[in-house]
Image (tube, rainbow, N blue to C red):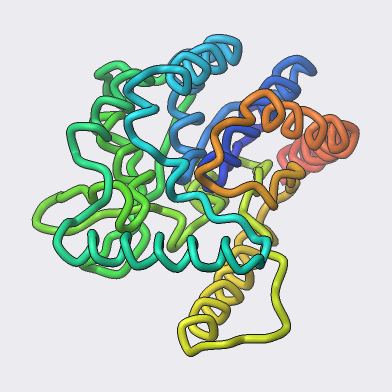
Length: 299
């Protein structure tokens, strides 16, 4: 009898995605099977590392080493971090940052060079093919030319992850067959559908999308456009999550995507969120296995 295949859909969210490490640690410690992994952006990074070598302690150690390295510090990602407090000085600084970033992106495809992006990814993943992962894996990206979701479930592993994590304007886009490919979070922030398409019978989704403290007063057309896009993203994300059987939401929503200084705290939040869902997960798997068995028995 074919066993129930459990898929894990790891969502994007930059630094918040480090909480995925904690989720995986609790799942494996409690013998919850992970038969399939689909990842978006940081979810693709963590998912690829674990799928290639299912040792979550090793994944955490590699993440620690990278964040402490000179190569990572030279990215200056903390420059991209913007606080939510509305003091006058911080608003002025925020405006200067936006102006600087805008001017840079007028002349460059991305703020971070291809060389630096490659260097970071090379620290985390060896040169392997997706077919070599010990757990079936796929990374979700966005095809800008065709305006559609692109799922990498074969081919070079680094290339797939690079495409999925290519945040627009920040990391360099991937060129594939004449098309531009970037961050999968635009079309599938939590890749639930991709996990099902890979053959999962049930999917556990891990959502680390941010939640802003919304101001009641909007002062410019730019703020209105930004708010509209944010709301659209929430609605799309909610629709994706409704397709999942179980949703785990670590308490990291207020952390900026570029705040990589809280690795231990983020992992702990992932552990706590998964522990709170453990009984629900175990009960659902038993129920799903029984239904599947009875269906096959009487069909």
